[in-house]
Image 1: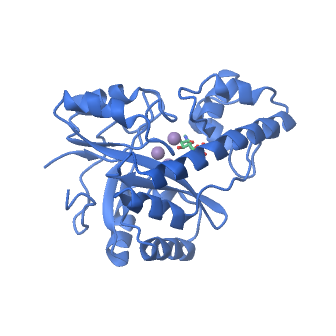
Image 2 (image 1 turned 90 degrees about the horizontal axis):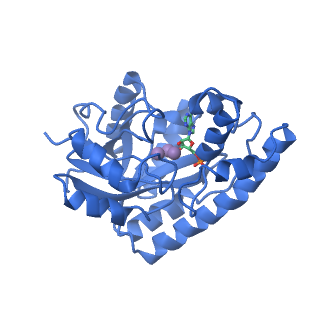
Length: 276
Ligand code: AMP
Ligand code: MN
Ligand code: MN
Ligand code: MN
């Protein structure tokens, strides 16, 4: 049985390893099929592909798109995309430009809470001039002693109701699915167990995603508990969606689950890779 890891990050977004190092680490950990899925970015895929060609590992072109749905932020993983698709590239550029504006507002919000120069401080952690994320703010807040680690940081800052949170308008769910399909890829709702919505709204989300043409949900994610593996396997069956699996690895010391660290998919679901 092949080992799949279809969600991880490199220095082209908020990961700590270069695209080539992510591929090498995945191969050394027994991953057979890897998708690199940087936030709103496909720029690392060429480097990752060059590394994969020297190793016994298959690379799937991916990305993780930021989406606003009602009043929450969702992530949609794209798998098997053409990284040169003009519609997708234009959409990703628009999302990344929004990140620059948001970073300034996060800096202002942290200054209002007494933390000065956070935008410059976060920028010092940026590893791709094309992308700034809350993770870079988190690393700055840890460095300056405002939080123990990034996890602690995300419970005390940068999230709704806490200092440094700002609302932001990302792409719509419809746009994200359309861009991914225009690029010939599959649209996968990332870590559905992480969204702070009740059961009724979760069902509404899954139904809408499916009706918009969404292909799959992440049943296995490092964001999920073992109980959620079972719960989302059931949702995949009920909603007629394929099942995906990904570690969401960001780098040594920042992720609980390493590359290739998810268990096999539960029985009774159809894997997103069934026709690959
Ligand atoms: P952004 O897309 O800039 O809003 O940043 C989202 C990123 O922040 C996620 O992809 C994670 O890397 C990180 N993040 C969000 N919540 C947490 C958390 N509770 N613990 C650790 N990292 C988190
Ligand atoms: Mn991230
Ligand atoms: Mn995500
Ligand atoms: Mn991710």
